[in-house]
Image 1: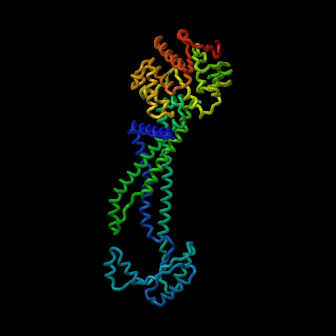
Image 2: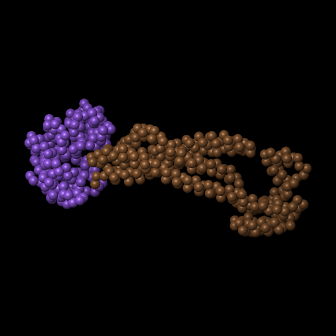
Image 3: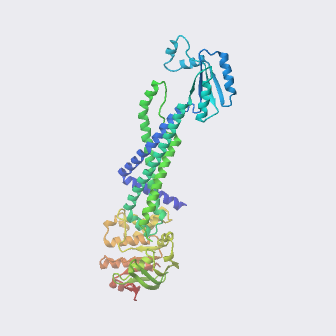
Length: 302
Length: 217
């Protein structure tokens, strides 16, 4: 065990020594990996930030049923009871026109406009959450509600949220594909770096094999080299992301303030940041593993 | 200790490097493998650490058929053999000290004991004062002595040297052979391939004479 640990320490130190001896190449490799990884990582951070905005939106089907202006409260209550008894309706909330006006007044920039109105132009409304999820069934329910005499207009409120959800899903898939492609790129970079390193150390490998080094002993420093390269690339990716989000947030803060929002693009959570560094390290190790498996057999003594 | 039994080594293309060679080297023996260039000396020596495998016949080292060993077992065989190559196979990107340290890097010795072993090996071949020198700064004879230090640092029971005096003047060659003789005096089995008959005559040792891949004496 002690010997095994000592050999690992030696391999780690040898790998660090190689990186130190080829500083500029090591930095450039880490930079390429860092930039490549920062693209999907940045996309992920952007989506995570936007999710916090869209979480407030109703993604479940929802219908807003607006009544005619002349509809009396008793007529509205009767309609409410009828809606509640409908098995296709899960939940019904009545929004009186006074409450709707108050909510509108609370909206940034509209208070003065509302105050200037002589009378409340808003109708009474019901917010209906159907038990149905199928689009055709929802359309049929909306059409039925629309045909009721007290109903002036029916609006399907969840359509935009569903579109946004679908868009976010597509963006997530695109980021996953981009991450997969760039992961291949990272593996290829490490593969090539290790290949060149093996060629550089060919004499040492040959001699070590001749005088009794095991394959594991010879492979180990290359694995560390690949993993360290991935680790450096992952760390650089986080640095690039942090700097980029900081720069973008200057403009985003200004834009969000104009909407009365304190929205900012958030950096990755500690768990996500750690996952990226680990992922990058593992990819570096994997690239080294592939390269060593392929090229060490070319330097072989039976 | 080392036993060859009807060993044939056939290279791709059908050329035979060794043709049914049989002999036994006893523990503590000093033996020369003599013969002209192309006689099969190097091929014979390469079969012992399984750098080459026999086409037929058996090569036994300490009772172990090395020709049948799995690839994964070879490092452990080679660690118990001290190998000195004709071209020394030194690493020129590190010091003499680090060259000798190389076999200990994958052994089980602690750092302090390994360092003591390296110094002792360098001292034995008269290179302790030049431990920090790069091999390129050493003379041909010194480089060969450095290769010997690396071969003996693991304290092997068998020392195998392929033309260790090939590019040396007579005095340096004799000095190298003296080192081998010293190791043999403390019980190390030594097998040296050489084409230098004059050198063989100066040392008491058994001679295995090869000609065109066959043992002739």
